[in-house]
Every structure is written in C-alpha cells, then in structure tokens.
Length: 238
Length: 322
Image (cartoon, rainbow over all chains, first blue to last red; front, side, top):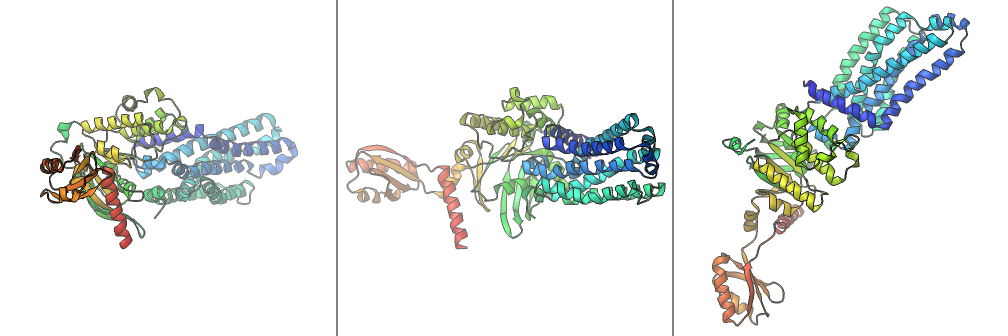
C-alpha cells in the first residue's frame, strides 16, 4: 500500500470539499441542528429538572453527528467522481482499489470526527458556562464524555464504509446519500435508546457495542471493496 | 527513455486475439497486432467500433473476455495491473479534470498517484510542454475545452509513460492548438514514447502515424497508410485533356499497360494500370497520336478517407448480410 497515493486522494478530496458548497452545507447544517436545538432546551430547564437528567445520558444523543455527517460525505465519494467523469483517469493511474478507498474514507473521517468533536466541545462549554449549575452537572457526566470520545470515531468509520459501499453501487449522489442515511439510522436508534436509558448504559454494554462496531467496520470495508468494481464503474455495465 | 534504450527491447504492445464482450454484446473481438517502441499507431473506426473498449482493456481498466496481450513487457493479467499502469498513461476523450481545483492542484494529485520524482519540476516541465505554465493557478472549470484537453495531456505526460494512449487528443481544439499537439506527439515519438492514437481525424492519422489500424468490432486492416491504399485500390492514372476525346475507348483499350478506364468529369479519365510509371509515357504517346492536348497526367492518389470508408462500408455490408 502506498501512503503517498492514499495521501494524494485524501488531499484532493479535502480540496474538493472546500470548494463544494453542497458538501460544506451538508457538513454544517446537521451539526448546527444538533447543537442549537438541545441548547435551547437546556437553557429552558430549571434546577429541578436536574434530578431526572442524572438518570439519563442525554449527551449521547449527539453521537448522531458522527453517524450522519460522514454518511453524506462518503455517499458522494464514488458516484460523484463517476458522474464528473474524473474516476477513469484515477483508475487508469497505478492506484490500488484499497488505496483509493482508504484515501476517500480518511477524507470523510477526519473532517467528520473534527466537526463532531468541535460541536460536542462547544455544546459542553456553553452548557458549563450558561446553563443552571445543577443542570450542567447533571448533564455532563464523565462516563458520557468518555463514551462520546471513544464512539465518535467508531461510529464515523462504520458510517463511512456504509456510505462508500452504497456510493459504489449508485448512479445518483442524492439517492446514495438517502440510502446511506437510512442504513445508518439503526445505529442512531441504538445510541438514542441508550441516551434515554431504554438500553442500560453500563460498561459491559459499551464494550459490547464497541466490539460490534469494530466487527461492522471490518465488514463494511469488505463490502465496500467488493462493491468497488472498476469495470462496472467505468462502463456502467456488468 | 532514449532511442538507445528502446533498442534491443521487445515490442511495446503485443495483442493476440484480444476481445471484450459485455454480456451478449461484442465490443471487439479477435484483435491482434504488435507495436514497437517509439511507434505512433493510429486506431481508427466508426463510433461503437470498440476503439475505446480496446484502449480501456489494454489500460487494465476492463478485463479481456478472450485473447491475450503484453503491455510494456507485462502480460495483461489482473496481478500486473499496477505495474502496467505505472508504465502507461491514458488520456481519455473527456479530460476528466477536477473542475473545482486548479490546474496545479489537479497535476499535484496525479504526480502523487504516479509517485513522480521531483513533482514540482515535473509539473513545471509538462505545463511548459503543453504551453500552460501561465495558467497553472487557473481553476479547471473556468478553462475552455481546448485548454482542458491540454491539461489532460499534461497529466498524461507526468509519469514519463512508455506507452501513451491518446483518445481523440485534438477533439475540440482549434487548428493552432491541434498543431501544437501534433508537434508534441512528434517530440514524444523522438524520445521513444509509443503512442496509441485513437482519432476520427483521418488527416491527423495520416500525418502522424507510422501505421494505422481500422477497427469495426474486428480489425479490418492494419499497416502504413500507403500500404493500405495500395492493397485496397488498384493503381491508376488520372488524365486531363483540353477537350473530351472523340473516341476514348479506341485510345485506351489498345494500350497493353492499361487494364481498364472510365471517365472522370468532362475531359478527365481514370485509367487502371499495373505500374503508373511505366504506363504514363505510353498513355501520353497514345493521346498525342490521337490529337489530344494533354493538360495533366499523374498517379491518382486515394486519400486515407477513401481507404477508411471503403473498409468501414465493407464491414457494414458484411454485418448486414450476416
């Protein structure tokens, strides 16, 4: 595997994101929704609301960001290039399939995780500074912070392979994004059920879910690789 | 690669019975040829003849359905894909540039994909070669079609390819830009690069190519343009006189070197001959003896376009019968 070729794809993708208004919009709008709406709710809470909050893990609800943002980015990655007609010159270069997919995955992973951490950090900072102290201490719990830090990259990686696998089979970026989000929704559902204590948030649950995600990530990589068929992508047949 | 380095090497491309099918549809089949290093090889054929599929197959983008090939010394098998692609470059008909990125950013990406040594120097060199050095920071989406073609050509040159596949490289270019591309191709030939040129411009093929192949699903003909003309058309003399001959049949039929003749315009005649140089003096003498004023006489030269049309029409007729 050539690091230089992986880096070439990674750098090219980031440069493209910067100039692509749709991508910038997709990367901004979801995190903003996930930041502003809960902040409004938090600011309206009185100190008495801190008691039920202590029994929930509301912060985990923000794990939807590292699921949904990279799914949209990754869903565009292959079908977008194919529609632009830029895929053939890349495939005609000495790049291996794995290098191309890894470069694309990293270019979705890094900004998504950065955005997820940034939004989460901003949320925590604003809550600490401006919310009722009792609400803030009930909301921001050490284990939840740790879960957020650990599960953000895992969820992003899973979501990216789903997006790339769908993108490699699609003929339209919008459809690819919709299907990717649909396929990632069960993950959001699980994190929401934990956030609202339907699934108990215990260390064993976290370890179990982490292990499942690692397996899913490996599976996703394999499915994405298998879906990436040079011949079909170039000719649209086979 | 210098000319000396190309000596003693096998052919750049050996293609043997190669074919590609998409389901039941045949893109091309039974294609065989060899191309030497430093050769400019023209690949002609009507739309849908299988030219692009052939290029993509040789470029390891499509897996062949039948036959075999050796590309830049490597058998065309999936395991050799990376090694083959290191040694070749393909410029597709559509430039396929990242239109949101600048010319420089496009070339930087591909310099890294080809793991080019001294990428900055190489990029400068190729941009100078295609006369785009002053446009390096322009966004590709803002360039004209012709300029995009030039950037695509620069991209194809980044890796010092041994074999360069050019698919319609002058498509959409104005005459001056086309001439620059032709000069560039000539320069590449001098440096030992093998060029596989797919084109619809027959004059371009005739001017640039050492040999041409005409494809219409199967290979219809292959050889230097002159050889194809000689093989396809009987040699003939074109004669023009000041006034129509009163009895042309009597003048031409008796001549031993003339196989047949027919009129070509008011006072023009086309004579099928076995050897134009031997036949011309006899014909002139016969015309003078018949009292004709000879304005011109010379070997009738069939254009590459006539060769192409003859072969393609023959192919279509064969397919209709089948």
